[in-house]
Image (cartoon, rainbow, N blue to C red; front, side, top):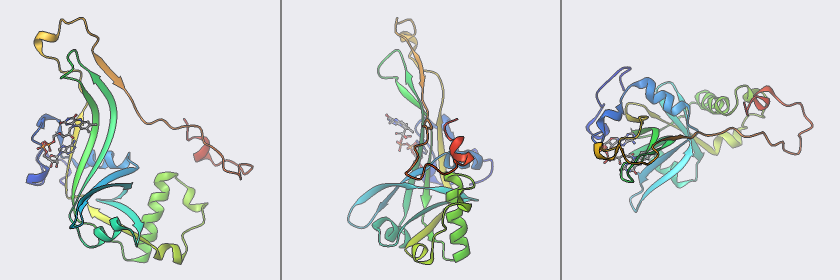
Length: 217
Ligand SMILES: Cc1cc2nc3c(=O)[nH]c(=O)nc-3n(C[C@H](O)[C@H](O)[C@H](O)COP(=O)(O)OP(=O)(O)OC[C@H]3O[C@@H](n4cnc5c(N)ncnc54)[C@H](O)[C@@H]3O)c2cc1C
């Protein structure tokens, strides 16, 4: 993807339906990914088509996932299977005056391509550290690092962010002209993911790290 592009990087990423909501800028894609903890990966294993949710994170111009070596998802990704990945943030419910015109506020991304294995051990450890940083900045220095056995059992994979599109919906209700005078409340019900109060495990007597104390704020 270009840094600032108003055109789709490929025919299959060109948003046709409500094209005015399309966004092909790299920074928009990065922002959608960086705020997400999970993505949904669709692939066909030769027998059927699957769509599997999994954790994701970004380093540079690549999206990273990891998985058990023995898992079907991992095996298919490592076999170079073509994938389509969806990431969605739901930001609100849009209540129009007619049932037909109800919609949602969202930021979503669809990414295409194939994954590659992160083979280099240092790059693999750095990628896992980046995931830990995403979960809680600083925690990688506190948690026991993955040992050789754990690292060997896990595949870290990345897909280049070259072929992707974002779609952003954030406007007011789009009512038909003849419905505007109807005595029906219209507007947006915003929504977002909330951070809850941390729940201590049975070692709660330990000092609480800052990233836990600040979690719910
Ligand atoms: C929370 C949410 C709720 C939605 N609710 C509905 C609904 O109820 N009904 C409905 O029809 N649509 C809904 N959409 C929009 C939906 O995601 C599709 O954009 C829409 O259905 C058109 O799909 P299409 O394949 O016909 O579009 P096309 O414009 O033909 O798609 C062409 C290409 O554009 C890209 N693309 C399409 N949609 C998206 C997207 N959302 N984000 C990023 N890239 C995209 C893909 O690369 C796709 O191959 C919703 C989206 C979100 C995020």
